[in-house]
Length: 449
Image 1 (cartoon, rainbow, N blue to C red):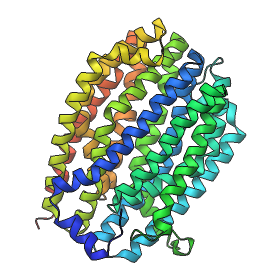
Image 2 (image 1 turned 120 degrees about the horizontal axis):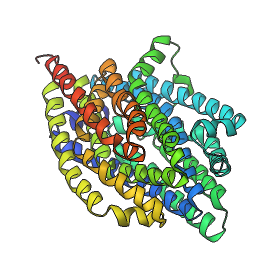
Image 3 (image 1 turned 45 degrees about the horizontal axis):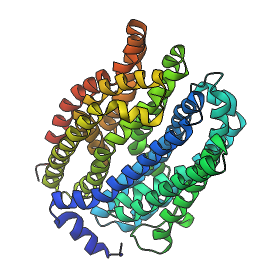
Image 4 (image 1 turned 180 degrees about the horizontal axis):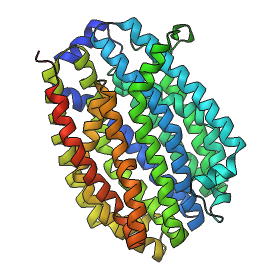
């Protein structure tokens, strides 16, 4: 994790074979995603021992965390994509201004979310899908998540700035440290001190602030090209709109994902807390199975953004092709594993016959979607990393919003719980169908250079 000069960084990002570069940058992000998702699964496991209502609260709070991260990733992906292209052009000063401005926007947003969320805590949890029995658990958990909101939004910016600068190892260290601390905290506070749901919330809050400090250290020690300084905050309104424009696909993607979790909770509520708990577990498992592809894609993004800024368009195309083949190969393996071992996986989190019955069926209906997700996810990541904000925003809205929510509502009316269980794979197939022609058009518009 040593520092490097601007020239060394340029040669590494534009001269290293793209396959090696993606793997080098992707391994730390894959590890980060795996450990973070292992934390999510561990959190689900520890809380599920407290009962179905507590387990259902995890799904509700998961929607809250998704909402907070939606804003964090908006500023993080927006500033990260811009500064990476600036660094590709050799404009380090503009990259530093972009990083500092994005960080400040995230900090202000996190404070606002924290304040409003704590004031309107109970109605907010009801809006996110809490039933009367789940609400006490959800509020006990969520208040600590809201206290951690500023750290979560700022960490999203720091993480993405480090990744887009090609310093994924720094990012990995911060995220992994926080996740490991969180798992340890869950075990101590829930299992040893029997603090229940508040213990899970306190553990998450503390780990988020520790992770934030670790992610900030490379900037303080000047181990990276960019800087986080309030003196570098831009006074140009165009800089803020540019960050929001490029980051808007992340707001759509994460925000709609959070809304889709809310919709899932609403649609599953008539079938009881067992249905909400089962679908919450399935969501966490699917995120874990898919996280390797997300990690590969996050390794691909700085490669595409930097080389696009450096006008190395053939390298961008070659990198995308490699990312797609690599991701699909991995998803064949993880999808097969999830389908075969669906029952023991669900039973590991909640050994309730009704939860297991609902969860196994839902998981086996959903895992085949892993085989096609690299196309839609990779297309979205490509468009955002090279600054195609309009296309990226549209693609970001498809999977969890434009298709999934309407499909789930309609299918639940027609086929009940089975309709809910099969909604995700239908939405994923539709998302791929619209992604392919957009990708073809984007590549055809690349300058012939």
